Length: 365
Ligand SMILES: Nc1nc2c(ncn2[C@@H]2O[C@H](COP(=O)(O)OP(=O)(O)O)[C@@H](O)[C@H]2O)c(=O)[nH]1
Ligand SMILES: [Mg+2]
Image 1 (spheres, helix red, strand yellow):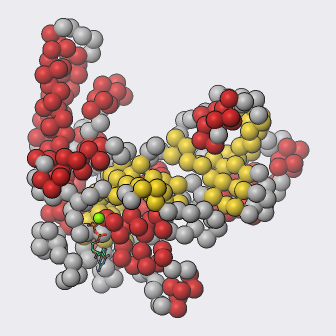
Image 2 (cartoon, protein in one colour):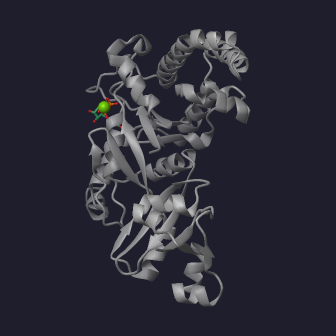
Image 3 (cartoon, protein in one colour):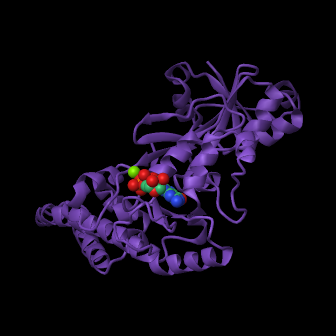
């Protein structure tokens, strides 16, 4: 399953983010978002379309789509050489699809910083260096094998060999694989290496409430300048994670009573989750059986309706006859499945139909 790894130095709020994101209550849902494992959790994706469909269907249970987050232990300087169990933690990052890096901006005298002073750019640099070194090590291990493939004149070996030599230079200059221009064919050639620095990167600035909008803008610009072309402003989030954990644990009423409110110019956990969903290239389809349940499902973009059926139940694939599909907007307009059918808004599709974001699917089995 696609996932986002939470990465960063120790004591910067990674586990706080993980807890906040997996505890997050979605007002409409009746579904436990507890963690699957101490380090793996599902974050619910807020979706107004789901609410609207469920309202028309008068569904008792409303289940949002989720994104998998993994809380990875803190990396320290020297991780790529095995410091602080670094190799093990780096291998956990390798298993994830994208990286959410938390960077500490909050000051708390009682929470020691491994590098003593708050300095977001230095922290980004430390983590970046470890990821780059880990990728260089990956390359170091494959060179011999590829050289012998070249000698045996194996197909694509020469091309691969030249490409990874260029990538090695690029990494040695401290750059991420994600900033190296690659065509589709080249991407395919290096896929097997699963480079850490090729994963999409999101950055969470863990701020406290003393921060101002101007300061946030300034830091975002510095971060982009520092990190380079693989991140844009959309990928950087300023969040007070300690407060978000409080908010996630309280009902709206309790939070109001205790006067715990989010500064209006900060990002929300929803912003982060939504962007995470995008970088994983997920779209949403819906199912609904009326009063029982309406549910949103995350699906890899480009999947067929038959592949989508596999998320629900193996039977839906084995006994697939056809799928009835109404776009969510048409469904809201029509107000019922019957009306959608009458007005020609309902399509009947076979197993090879490519699912669109926002499709409501009814499987005939
Ligand atoms: N003041 C403040 N403390 C925080 C914030 N985020 C985390 N902490 C505290 O920092 C300590 C380390 O947080 P944790 O999430 O366990 O860090 P991790 O090592 O990166 O997983 C804990 O005591 C948290 O309560 C924050 O936004 N503000
Ligand atoms: Mg932790």
